[in-house]
Length: 254
Image 1 (cartoon, rainbow, N blue to C red):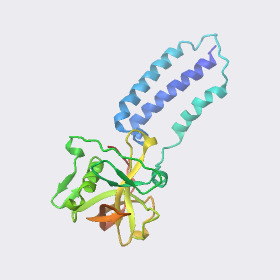
Image 2 (cartoon, one colour):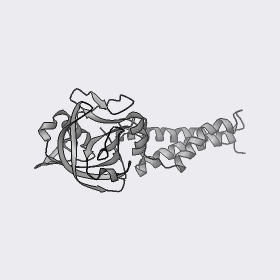
Image 3 (cartoon, rainbow, N blue to C red):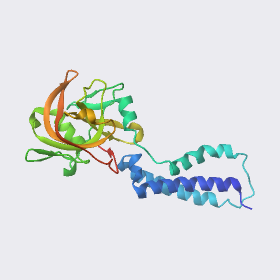
């Protein structure tokens, strides 16, 4: 006769291992943690597989524990929710509660439009794909070099003023903005989804009033040195703006 307690334990450990492997194989892990954490998630999944094999040896044991299904439900419910509920963006929630980082200087001090003072740490990297790219008078922004590009713009806006820039992001408006202003924002994960913060550049666009919050857009315009709440920072004077589909992975990583 199968030991029910052991069967439930086996299902739980095997289930969590399968869930982690599923996230890794579908790249949905990017919605939860920074890619640098993937190897640790894989190691955890493999360890759970080993634990499952060890536990399964007692499937036909006659020993029983006194723990009921109610006890195991604290493990089963999160597992089932993980499989059946798709992860969603927390962009608006994070932006409203933590604000958007729009002022970053070389000292790593951060100006926030908001209720909480979060500091985004910019990691120094040598790989060219993470470096700011300029082709002629155009600044090329990718998911890889997004943070490094913002860092350069905030440190020396005058140097890049009047250069053309094109980037993607979602629309976010602070309560102090006028109808033609908004932030082209991105969600930044430094470790895991729990520490998600919002970063971006202020945009000035004549037809900005027509854009709704959370709409994904691609903007193209000129960099201008401006002031917001007494702080100097770069702004995009938008010349072209188009709505786009939300990217498969909406997060960026330092």
